Image (spheres, rainbow over the protein chains, first blue to last red):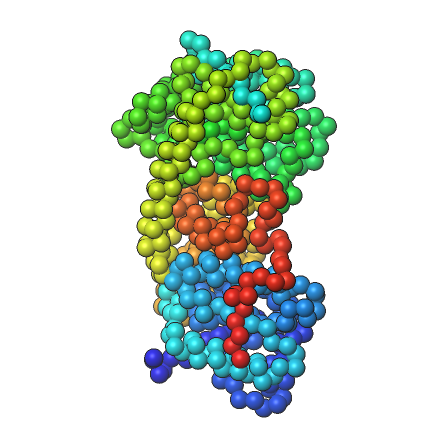
Length: 141
Length: 380
C-alpha cells in the first residue's frame, strides 16, 4: 500500500436520509477521514450514470451513492432505480478494469450518523487498499 | 399449423421473383404500401423506399448486400401516430429487433404495420458495398453475391461488415412473415412462412403454391449460427484484452473525433436532444487551458471517452449489434465490437435479450423491491 496515497471520493447523498445522517455525524463530532466531498441530491434516483462516469474520469478514486433504506424513499422508489443504475455502471466499468468496489451504493438512514461515519471510513480504507485510479494524469481522458 | 408458401423462381432469378411477390402482396387491399430497399439509380446505394404503386417495384432489391442504415428508425417514424391504413415493411432481423426495442420505448407501434422479416446472410458496410458494386448494376450484382455465398463463400477481398460476421441472429424474430433464404436453392424457390395470425391471413390470401416441408433451412441456420457464435466469442475476448484499462480504452477510441455519427446511426439512441449536443459541453477557453495545465496536456476534442461510456450506459442494454455505428464512423473506430462486448455484460446483468420479446421491459424502465441485493454494499 502506498502510504502517501490519499484517495479522493465523491459521494452523491440524498437530502432526506444520508445527507441528514452526514449532518448528524458532524454535529455529533464523530471522527471521519477528510477524503470525501459530498454532493447533496434530492434523491439517489436522480444520480445519472454520467455523473459517476465523469467523477471517475476527472480524478475521483471512488464514488459513493447513498440514500434511504428500501421502503423509506421520500419519493417512493428512487433508491430502487439507483440500484439498477449502479448495477449497470458496475457491469460497464468493470469491463475497463475499474474495480466494482470503486462505485458503491449504500443505504444510510437519517438517524444513522454513526453508520455514515463508519461507511465513509471503511470506503476510504478500501480505496487505500485498491490504490489510485490514476485518471488525473491522462491527457486523453 | 403455420402456412408455408413458395415463391417460385423462374429464369429471371431471385430478385425478380421477389419483386413479383411484393407486387402481389401490394395488390392486397388491406395494404397501402410496402417499404423495402430499392435501387433508385443504376449505381449507388439501394435505400429503404415506401412504395405504393406496384409498378414502382421494378428496381426493388430486398436481397441486396447493402445496409446503409437501420430501418427501425424509419419504421418508427412511419408508425408514430396513426394513418388509419396498413403498410408492410421488409426488414433484416437486427432491424426488427431494434424496432421492437423502440416500440417498447413508445417510439413506434406495431398496430398498422406488417413486419416481413428476411433471413439475413449479412451485408457489406458502405465502403465495401461501393467497391463490390463497382460499375455493375444493382440487382444483377445482388444475384452474383448470393451465388457466390451459395458456392462456398465470397470472392477474394470481399468481406461482410464486422457486425454481420459476429451476428448470431441471422433469422428474424417477431415478424409476421419470414422469407426463408437460409438453405434455399435460389435457382428454384424461396419459402415464405407466416409467423403470426396477421401474416397468416395475408399470405393465405396471396394464393401461392405450398412449399414441401424439409429441414434444409433449420440445418443451414444451425450451422451458420454456430459459426457466428464462435466468431462472436473470439471477437469479444479480443476486444476485452484490448480494453482492459481506461487508458487502453482511450487508445482504442483514439481515432474518435466526437462527430457523434455512431449515435446518429444507432437505431436505439432515440433521445430528441442528446446531452452531448447541449451547452453542458460548450466549455469556455479558460476551462480548456485550466485542464491542460492540471494534466500537463489535454487531448482535443475533449470528453471522447466520457461520451462513449455514457452512451454505453444509455443504450447498451438495448443494443442489437446491427453495426451501423461502425458503418457511420469516418475514422474506422471499431465501435460495434466494443459496444457488443459491453452490451453482452450489461444485458446479462439484467438477464435481458433486446428485441426478442415485447413482454420483457427494458431494464432501466422498471424495478423490483426485492432484487440485486449484491449491488448494495454494507460498509458500516
